Image 1 (tube, rainbow, N blue to C red):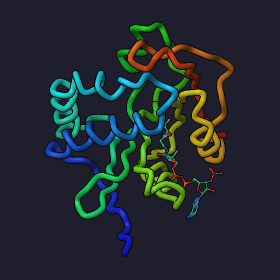
Image 2: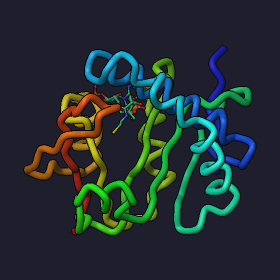
Image 3: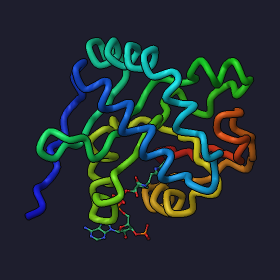
Amino acid sequence: MVHSPVIAPPQPEDAGDWFDFLVAQQAEAYRGIVPDDFADRQRLQRDERVQELREKFAEPGTGRRLAAKVAGRIVGVVSVVDAPMDWETALGFVPAPEPRQLDRLYLHPEFRNRGLGSALLDAVDDGRDLYLWLVSANRAAQRFYRRHGFVDLDESHRAGQSWGGVAMHRMVRRRP
Ligand SMILES: CC(C)(COP(=O)(O)OP(=O)(O)OC[C@H]1O[C@@H](n2cnc3c(N)ncnc32)[C@H](O)[C@@H]1OP(=O)(O)O)[C@@H](O)C(=O)NCCC(=O)NCCS
């Protein structure tokens, strides 16, 4: 029997699971696009990242984060944060096209194509204009975002080393 995921803000004790889920899903979603050692490289920073997440989950500030769980196991994550992020400023991707960024949206493969991505996006959405970074080769996600009102910016940037320098661009959703 398939249970419906329960969607709720992550708690500090979810930080490790959130990190592991995200790295696993990114490695899966971008297999053949990013280097084979992508997940290993991400995991080198696990302790530091998990501590940061724990702090963010304890005090979300202006960030909005949600986890979808089934039987206590994370099957989807989404987050919206203020922009620009530090890495964007460091790399000169400023000014940000909008002050809010859809930072993460990842589902476990078994939970895709049944409306959960849309449900998470709706639940995290506070109605403000929003942009996101898309790995340009990720056509399925691009279709999903276009259906949700995002349009592609006419640009192509290269991701950092651990992402194998893949081409990325931003998509923006502006309310009329
Ligand atoms: C991109 C992603 C978040 C979309 O979430 P999702 O839950 O699969 O999205 P939805 O189910 O709402 O819609 C996806 C597809 O299912 C279909 N669909 C929507 N609701 C459905 C339902 N109730 N039953 C069956 N199909 C449904 C849609 O028509 C859509 O088809 P298409 O995009 O192939 O044309 C998800 O697929 C995912 O995590 N992908 C891997 C990670 C990733 O790429 N993240 C984006 C990083 S920027």
